[in-house]
Amino acid sequence: MVEAEVAAAGGGRVEAVQLRIGQLAGVHEAALRFAFEQAREGSVAEQATLCITDLPVAVFCPRCDRIVELPQITPLACPACRQPTGDIRQGQELELESIELSEVGT
Amino acid sequence: MSVSETASVHAGLPRILQVRTKILKKNDELAREMRAGFAAAGVRVVNVVSSPGAGKTELLTETLRQLRDRGAAVAAIVGDLETDNDARRLAASGAPVRQIMTHGLCHLEADMVQAELAAWEAEGLAVAGLQTLLIENVGNLVCPTSWDLGESLRVVLMSVTEGEDKPLKYPGLFNTADLVVITKIDLAEACRFDRAAALAAIEQVRPGVSVLETSAITGQGLDRWLAAVQ
Image (cartoon, rainbow over all chains, first blue to last red; front, side):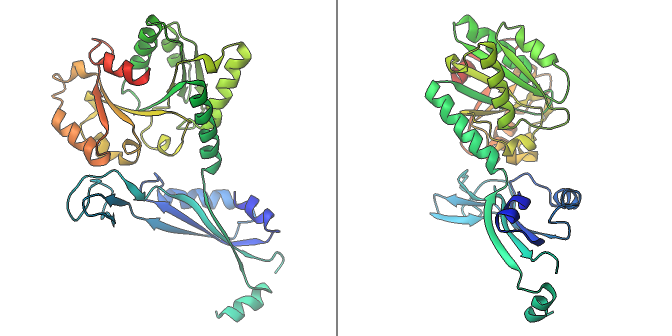
């Protein structure tokens, strides 16, 4: 995916890859970093740093009428008023946010 | 290192490509297309997920058998790392069944399902003529979470033998359930199954989700289950 984006942008060497990972995405950061080390070998991202933004779970509480972040994944309930809510607004992301490039051969 | 020093090293400022793309975009897009196709053809597609040994195959074999008895056109796809044992069990119902052997992959992906549907079509089975397609996912409560198969109903099974707190241990997957089925309910007493604790755990990770209790052996709860997948 990174190689395709870099090729589409006219090439270059990847300095950093920025991901956004929600706490409910089912991704373990250490395992992902380990896999990244293996996957980047021989690619345009061989020297790249992996940056991960960890996104906590946030739900919409119908009683408080606002989006609230949860201190932990469960229970899926408003931390302020205890109202159970499955209306997840953040925490399921598994996204490639950005790629930092330098020019080839420098 | 200042910005200008960085620039001199790289002979030009680093460029940032803003991408903001879902990593599973390819799967998501295919699954969306497949879901639209199933909906247009009137095929109900049920993605059944659970831990290994929760009773997926037993429940689905009985489901295929009873739906066929009612005259419904049904079929099933089953995923396992190795062996076609489950396909043979499911096929005992008389329904068309295809086995996906993933050879190590811990979940099914949309393109794998699509390939099996194409193989069926090549054999002369019209997928659009089905009423219900059951997909028995690889036994795993983690990775199937993120892989949409184009289903219209995602069912998560938990058996009375595996502990009431399963939903709390695997909140991500249970959170994606459209329906939770507690299986092997005929063993509830022998396992000292705590129904209230199980329901409370489900409610904590998927508030408001419907919960059914079934036994593929005694037939308990199957009428409501069959109505849900038909």
